[in-house]
Amino acid sequence: MALTESTMVEIGTLAPPFELEDAVSGAKLNYDDVKGPKGTLILFICNHCPYVIHTIEALVDVANDYEDRGIGTVAISSNDVEAYPVDSPDNMEAFALDNLFSFPYLYDETQEVAKAYDAACTPDIYLFDGDRKLFYRGRLDDARPRSGKQVTGADLRAAMDDLLAGRPSPEKQYPSAGCGIKWK
Image (cartoon, rainbow, N blue to C red; front, side, top):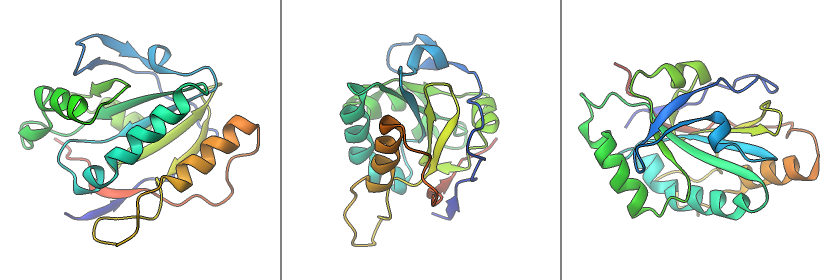
């Protein structure tokens, strides 16, 4: 499990468009289908990464806690499923159901969406404002597998609170870290 940090894309960057299939419903969804009126949280994850497994409960809690406050959430898996069959759409569906996702889990088969977002690792977290401008990119919090620290979601929650309160993007943002996306 080689640790890879996220690419710190420039704040204010516009969210690239996408249309991907939801592993649970089979529906094709685009950015407008998943966005919230006040913002959109995009999570690049996969099923097998220990960093995702370590944080998935907190990621789902954050999505649930902010949905009623106007922030939509979507998860995207871009891993090469030929090399990593555990990340296949059928397994994505099971992962989403097992972890009680209240948001879509989209499959990026061509990996074009991950490349457009400059995603590098799982989990890779992007928060866009209501105008599709990047407000936050970085870590959930400072907990890592075997760190002994409790997963709280503190960094992401603080950024989401800033967005909703109309405050500027957090000045200090730390990269997310996890398994590198499994490129074809």
